Length: 188
Image (cartoon, rainbow, N blue to C red; front, side):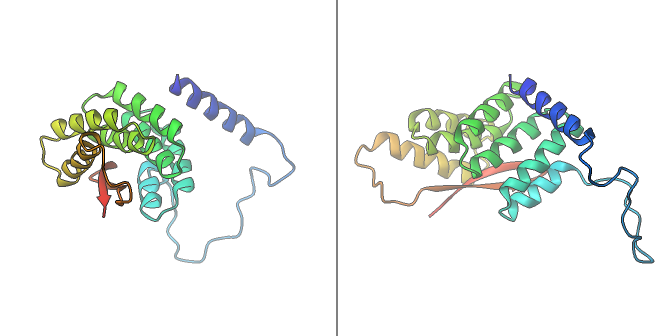
């Protein structure tokens, strides 16, 4: 379902770009580059650009870069997870949840998607389901990440302790790991 929607958006964007709007013609190249400027013949991967924009706090621009990556690479688990992460940072929780669930359907062993889904569920107040999702992420990660362990601990504390201190700061943060994967960190 999400793949069809993204495909439709890509077709509409392409059609909009091809319409005549009275602006610059396709032959316009702009002013010449200064002497000695290297010629750029290949664009940077949209996922890499998106990850850098996420790190800089530019979530809307990151989302656009991830859509560009989807157009170039297709709707991969990495792209879906990245789109979900950007939507999560933009507080578009329903969209983030749908994208992350789609990523998990594509690859049930993709730890970053499980983690990001757990954060999304915590933000929505679905603590019990988030606990199970974090448990899955922890198992898939084989307990190697202290951040995932901490997120699981917080989710367990919220489900087991009905008098849990709601004033406690339990902000979850996405952090990039490796080539485009994310870990969750709880910031005290």
